Amino acid sequence: MYGLAYVLVPSRFASLQSELDRTLAPFRRGGDDTFPRAKLAFDDATDTLARVQRSKFRYNSDGSLSWLDSDAALSFDLRLSRLSEHMAACRLDEFEGTFAEIEPDFDAFVRRFTDFARLDPATSRYGRWLNPIGYWDWWELGGRFNGAITGDRRPAGADQAICSGPNSGRAILGNVAAALGAHPAGEEAEIEANVELVGSLKLAADRNDDHWLPTALILPVGCCADEDRWVDRVGWHEISPGTRACLNVSADADFRRLVRAAYERFSELAAAGVAYHF
Image 1 (cartoon, rainbow, N blue to C red):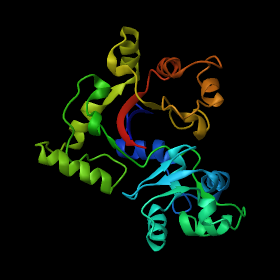
Image 2: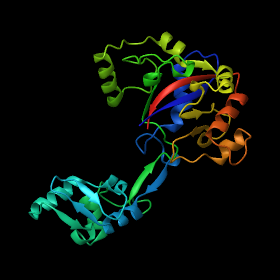
Image 3: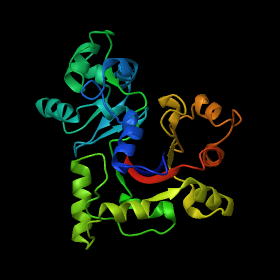
Image 4: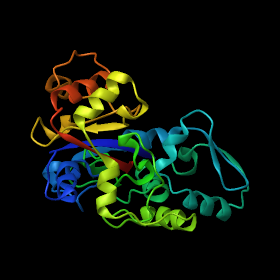
C-alpha cells in the first residue's frame, strides 16, 4: 500500500536528502538486520499459529485455501506450497478440515507448514524481532504524489533523485512510468514541487483545500520521543497519547485536529511531501 507523508523539516537545509534520512530513519521497517536488538520488540505469533492449526479450512482443487471459520489473514505465515505438496502426496484434490487433523503436534505443524523453522531462543516462542515503529519499506520525494503538497499535481518522475535508496519495487514502478512517457526529474525540480512552508499548509487547511491533509504526518526530530513523532490515518494504527500531549490537544483529538495543531505549532518549518510504501 502507498501513502503520502508530510515530513516536517527545517525551512532552510543544506541537503533535503540528509534531513529526510534523519527524520524518517527511526520509522523504517526491519529487524535484526537493520536495527540493534535494543530498538526492537518481539512480535509473538505463537497464539495466532495455534488458532491457524485449529481453524477449519477447505483446500480447493485449484490449490487455493478458503477459511471456513476464521479470518483469511491468519494464512499470512503459512507455506501453502507445503500444504499442496502434502495433498499431492496423499492424492487428494480437495480437503476440508484443520491442520490439527493433518499434523496434531503443534511444533511439528509450525515447522512443516509455516515460515517459522524454530522457537526464538530468547523467548521460547514463535515470532520475529521487529521495529515496533516501523511504518515504511521505502520512500521517495513526490513519487506518485508528485506536486500534491503544493496543490499542483504533476506526473511522477521515472527516477526520483531524493529517496530512501535502491528498491526493486520502486524500480519496477519507475520502469512502468518510463514506458508511459514520464521523464526523470532533477533534484531542484523535485524540491520545488514537493516542499511547502507549513504556514502555507495552515492557510490551505483554513480554506479546506484538498491538499492540506496527508496520509501521515511526521513531526520534527527532537520535539518528542520518536514513537510519538509519527501519526497517520491508517486504520490499524493507534494515535499515541504522547503525540496528543506533544501537540497539546485533547485525549480524543482525531487525525485532522492533530494535523491542524502541528501546523499551528510548527508554522515556521517546511514540509516535504513523500510517497511511502507500507
